[in-house]
Amino acid sequence: MNSVGTVRVISTSIGPMTLVADEEHLLEIRFGSSAMDVGVDGSPWLADREKSLENTILDQAEREIVEYLEGHRREFTVPIRWQGTEFQNRVWNALLRIGYGETTSYVELAQRIGCPKGARAVGTTVGRNPLSILVPCHRVIGSNGTLVGFAGGVDIKRRLLDLEAHALCS
Image (cartoon, rainbow, N blue to C red):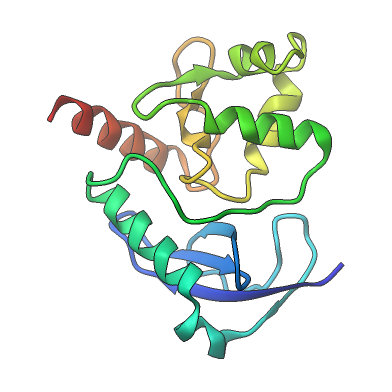
């Protein structure tokens, strides 16, 4: 299934990020400046790069992400939308309930959504989160406290968690 999206690459303190939006919602955030116009579900984006300059959703998303990375924002207001299975939607909605500066484990997250033996499935779904940072998958860690798995890499995950911890102490 092809999706229509406007693509913009932004420069941030953690490196380039690729944002994809339609006229009303932010649809996807990718780490890096991917030249590939493929969504997280593998379907191709029909990118309209010319509209990238005039997309108010991309403007708002860029502004809010930069403010977050500067330690000036704890919540996001840009409208988001994802398409997932019922299970994915439960997991991604549960990610939204992890507070700024807090962490939880994959096991705890599985228990929160009523699937106590589903930590591995939760981990896979967290890894497919199309809206990293805004849907805070970086706040999910291993049961033993280790930083595991993150689309942007474990180093960026550590930086995001450190940013939130530092901002809470300021």
